[in-house]
Image 1: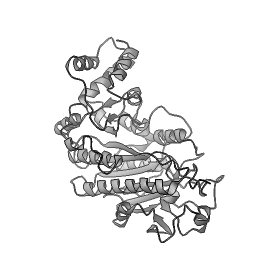
Image 2 (image 1 turned 30 degrees about the horizontal axis):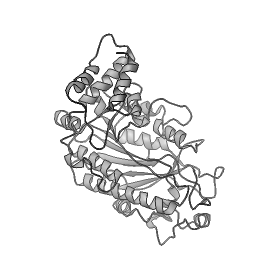
Image 3 (image 1 turned 90 degrees about the horizontal axis):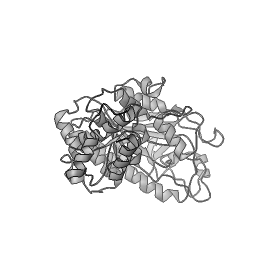
Image 4 (image 1 turned 90 degrees about the vertical axis):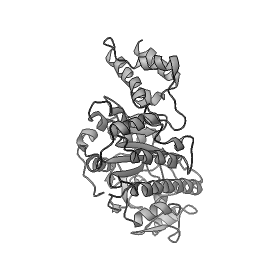
Length: 402
């Protein structure tokens, strides 16, 4: 069977999403991860990164709010929060009122806020900017993600497909490497076919000396479906079909259960969308930030009570911030620099980096003060204990996050 026919078969079977298959990824089941946790548990002390993508370009100025700045107040009539409304962080800044859970993490010194994060020559396109963040390459387009390149450097063994897992039906570009890719864990009732169809599908994963490199890669992808289809089901039977607390809370509940079960995964990718608030922003963003805060604070509380509290770090980012001034629709338009949240028991809580000026702008945009690749370099070095240069293609200053 040629490569094209093989891929058409896999897509038609509904086993994996097109994005994941194109990256060479496999889809996992609960039983896959359960089996892996029993046979090759992640050892205590090994770092775990949970990367949370906020899709749509979250408005950083109404998240970490410079409520004491008169420019903020005058630029956003009807959209600005007053000093008495925000949750005080110091330095004239406050969290959005909906973020009580994360404010408690701040008070507990488990939350770091990296201010003014961005990159040179920013792009206002959702697609291009997210591609830049996920490939970690602002000026030179890449066909691999920064964590995919980290994965490429890991041992080439049966656990490779388990080392990086995305919650959801498709694989984000950030987990696609040049030699391999992470795996996706569909939410809900994922099942590989049984009987004759299952036997035929498994046979597609058998290696053949007649396979060209691409066919061999596709065959390995199919084999990964079964490697990571035996291990997740018993880990979280109660999670199936559950949407308690919202989609993000469900994803993080699954991640927490995997961590507690010592699944040999060091990188988890989760997401929350809906942040493209060009109109009626205040209510929409408040709801989303409330979901974000509740989900991550609940996750952190659970992790803090477990045996791996010091190993887990969660990083939350978005593709760009928004403009200083509100638009005519009580929303905000695409901007540039914004805050990145880093949280965990081992995180040195507090501010990192400088708060962007609201008057010293770059063609109307906030000027960034911290390159996002410094955030990546820091978690690669301090959490995953990897060489940042190999994944990022260069050297970037490390941040005092731990």
